[in-house]
Every structure is written in C-alpha cells, then in structure tokens.
Length: 129
Image (cartoon, rainbow, N blue to C red; front, side, top):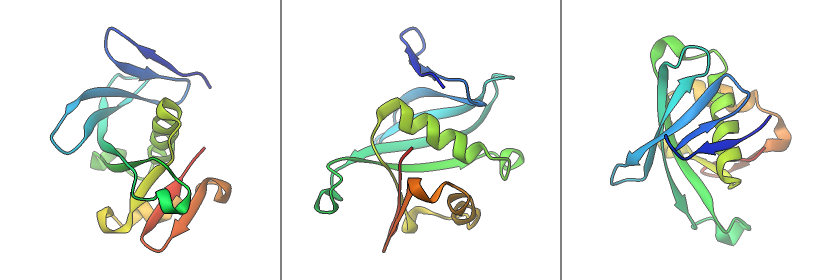
C-alpha cells in the first residue's frame, strides 16, 4: 500500500478500493468524502477532529471520527478500507465513541477487524493499523 497527498485536490490516494478527499472544516471538524477508486463516486463521508482527552490512557492524540456511508454501499467492507486510509493519512489512532455510533452494524464491522488493531474501552474503540 502507498499513500500520497496530492496538493492540487488535497486528496488522499492509495492502492485500496477507496480514497478520501478533504472537503472543508465544518465547524465541528474536518470533513472528507469517501470515494470509490474505480468509479470516482462518493459513497460516504467522514468528519473528524483531533482530541487529547485520552492522554491519561497513553494516547496523546486521537482522531475522533464520525462516518457514514450511502445505504447501497453499506456492508461491503468499505468501513475497513476507509479506516485504513484515514489512519495512514495521519498516523494517529482513531477513536469511535459508543455514544456516536447510531448504526449497530458498526460494532459488527469493528469485530471483523484484526483484534491486534482494536482496543475496546468502556466508552468506545481505539483503532490503529
């Protein structure tokens, strides 16, 4: 896998099925679109912000993420591809808070990740790759 941030489009590309494109700050965090490499079609979006509230657990920074996929692209493995892309772009652990998860399928998708990449805490998941 390779990672490259193109200056012209502020776009993250790799050899996986998806790429992320930074859109803009939205008042809550930074928004990125999730796009298919093969069709150049947006299939979802991520909003993230860098947080420091897990520093007492040894994580000086985490990316608190909120993501969603268009319904026709759910349950096809794009969740994992997207997490890998975001982690590779910043090399900061990802934080999925239970209180922000509204689709129960996210728990199933996290369970399918390599257990070495997931730390389950009392109130969410820390994910690294």
